Length: 271
Image (cartoon, rainbow, N blue to C red):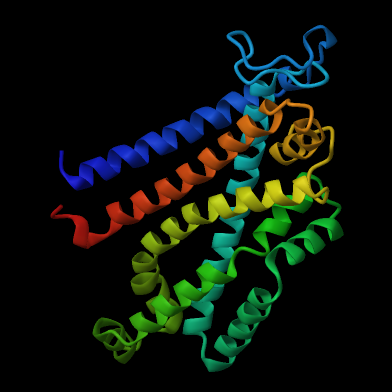
């Protein structure tokens, strides 16, 4: 098996695991909220792989549900953020120096504000909850990708076939849609996937701090926040196992994005 096939197998495996976690979490939502005080504070065992908490809730179903919510929020937020980045990046490079200056200033301004602070402010202003967190993440994760796309478009503008298209009388919009957008799609897709882990971590972070999803939701940030007070009593599984699953999910998204970037790279075709 050559390197390209290995990369493809890794990408498919990572995506398959993430899909299974997401689907399982959706189906476990009701079970994750069931309380049974006759089984409270059980350590991991054959029946309860992740143990139970102080209310007798199954930590495996709660962890899967929390990860599923984080993945869904991350996918929605990253998609919105990537679309914003794509549109603004193309506009900045195509619509002239004035537009480029305004968008570049906006990118620098947002990147100059501490990320988590801006995310908390937007989420809190929008009422927290699913909508507030999703929009908060979406509105704070686009500048880096927008800068990358803008740089790609600026390089494309100086290429010979783009200059020929302009000399043939094609409008800027036609040149952008026909010649630039197809070239930018691989970078856009990879950037979209690589935005997922950042979105998931930031959603979990602000929920952990109390500025995200509501406390009654079995979100991964809520699980980790509530479990902190029980660590001192030796109930390590309440935080360690959900934390490991969160890290694994984020790493797999990063692996999937890196693998996809290698697959889409023309220079790797001979490997």
